[in-house]
Image (tube, rainbow, N blue to C red; front, side, top):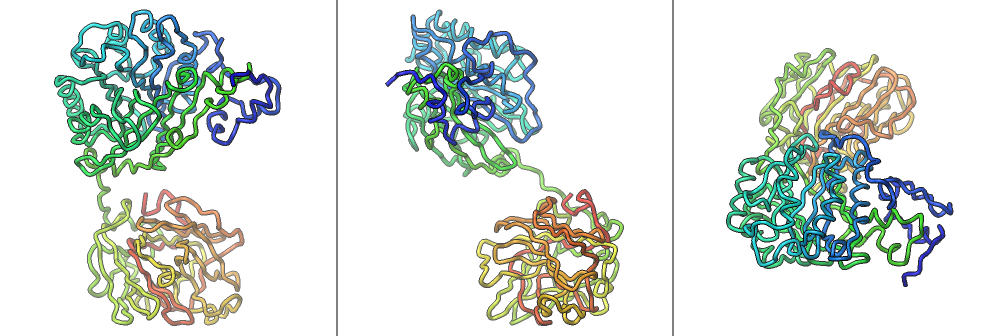
Length: 613
């Protein structure tokens, strides 16, 4: 079972896709092709302790950062059986790859040792000097094997407290403070442009411990909290009796706590509970002491990504990876990285929404219409109140809009709007395909926009949102903004002559499409955006510089922008529509969804001048 495999082919057999994100940083993906593997200093067993230079400086503004977690290491520090190498390898990995991972903090989850004796504690204390020398932010906490298990945080002096008490962390950048007994600590780090807290709690909290934890959070009321302790989750969807006490007395009523991490039990597990504020709290059990080599100082990497609103979680053993050059035994090949559902997973969190109860993101205030009238603006409409008659063109160019109803339909209004929209309000179009019903807006007869051809370029912008019950069979291909008049009427008969001269529409897959006839060609030129999900506000911009047209979704250029020259927009003097689409000079489809501010300029605008900036 434990026969060593010292050739690279055996090594390659277990190098599946699950390892690749970990191995990419360690240059081991080519192991199958070479007889000798170059192992980085971060994980090499024999690497000297002082060859890592430079200060630990994570990027506090990056919206991607990593929290490292190390669970129970007790079997590595058990009486005469002390082996610091696995812990040292994990810590060195974090140091060497901290910059690329943007590692902001490490949390140990307790049971550092088996018996809590002075020699055991001294050995793991020395291993953690690797982090002390670099000023790395980290926390530890006492597990039931580090102290007398029948005691609370009021137990008094212990070898654990002598080595890992508050004095060890005084003066470090992330240390926030400790309870008077010294067994509970809190730590603050900067990431994604804000403050975060790790609240490291003892194996058993006393009444004083609970009061101290509440005081700490009250002193940092807008700071999201990751609670670490030794015991809480016992198995999937189940808390231990003490874990339930922690939930009842501390977690449930403190909305700041969004994630808890604990060890003690095995195998790894997860639970999700709804707190008193109605928000999810993610509770994770991670412990590998029952596995090969006492868990081999496995580490969990919690990779936060605030742009994607996820935490990607990975579980790896740098110590085993560091042994690869010597050849791995059967169990090492299985344990180098864990890929089970409880070990490698993604947590979906809308961070802004989750933290809104204690730290709401201030709404962007409405901006005066005058600020939107940048040079070149020929039409600007915003909908901050229900439409009862004519909608005025705020550009002052006379491109007012009139209401048109079909089949007894109506046009509603909502205060809902894109968070970066200048005007705070939107129109609710309620179009239906068959039988055709709804209401839309059209420029008045004689409006200057009706005959404009934009030979020198243009920018058309609109905000929109589609509801959850948007149905492609009834709602697809409705126009956000379109120009009436057909290709045939303009003398351009290539492609379908009954198609309108220009339309910014939504396909059956909710892809925005700009289809129009330029002045310089007979056929239809088309720009395509990607699918835009329902119940989400989107900003669209179509920009033409007099030669080429580019579509932008949320300020990002789409991939399907044509390279062929396209100058201007053909016109026959007929109106523009908002929320409507004509085919063969007849209204054919009406928007089902919300439409916010719409602006048209007679020049190409830079992204920095878009309405959502």
